Amino acid sequence: MTRLDLNILGCGSATSTLRHLPSSQVLNVRDRLMMIDCGEGAQLEMRRLRLKFSRLNHIFISHLHGDHCFGLPGLLSTLSLLGKTGTLTVHTFADGKRLFEDWINYFSRERTFNLEFNVIGTRSETIYEDDAITVRTFPLRHRVPCVGFRFDEKPKLRHICPEAVTAHNVPRYFYNSLRQGEDYVTPEGVVIPNAQLTLPPEPCRSYAYCSDTMPSARVRRAVEGVDWLYHEATYGDDCARQARNRYHSTAREAATIAHEAGVKNLILGHFSSRYTDEQPLLDQAREVFKSTMLAREQMTIDLNHDL
Image 1 (cartoon, rainbow, N blue to C red):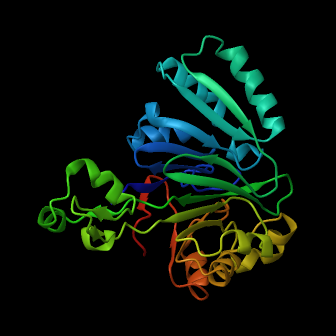
Image 2 (image 1 turned 180 degrees about the horizontal axis):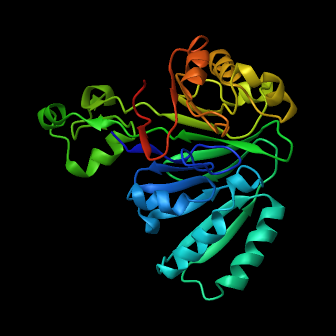
């Protein structure tokens, strides 16, 4: 089974507390690391989780509120001090590119790695794609331009059935073609259907990240059918009015989005510092959507399995 892990570095909201750090996550896709938001303390949490800085090649910034990006300048500086090589791409808005580019060019002129910026907008679009995964943005409803990110695994190769290929004398050089779904034709011209020689591939998994947003139909459509959804749950029912005024969501509203979108698993995060116990938020969400869990720092979730 291919590796797809989510590492929680921070799941608090606007300010750091003794319980939570601001928003940041690292998605491990086949041992390639992608950071989602970079609040203060992100690089320390990476160390605690023993995530390798050298494997970090993409950073996705959902919006330019400090609790989602103040950790980025320090992280970029540390990567240079550690001698990181290769290319690191920061996906952010035009203002973010200007701000962070100025900062890093002033404080870390002699970088050891190539820093690139991919300017994103608020529309739905594919912003990154490789052989394993596709990353799309979708608009969120917040006080400033803000996007969510959806990560979809690409179709995987089929598995060779050892007994079958041996029985039909399939040469090893043809194995890769079998994995891609081709039938095998024997030297005598007999067609052996691929289904007789291989086993089905592992299912493709998907993950969506909704940082700061009010509930909206656009969000529901964008995350429809994902295996795992991280959705902000800044407040509980007791602060529903405050959530609306500040363009945030309650735990119950996050669960409603998950239920209506037909997702399989929900992770709640971005908790207000007013809460010293998030269990009531979990209870409220589970009244609507049972497959819900709370995020916490230093948590690693295997996205290949459901709750």
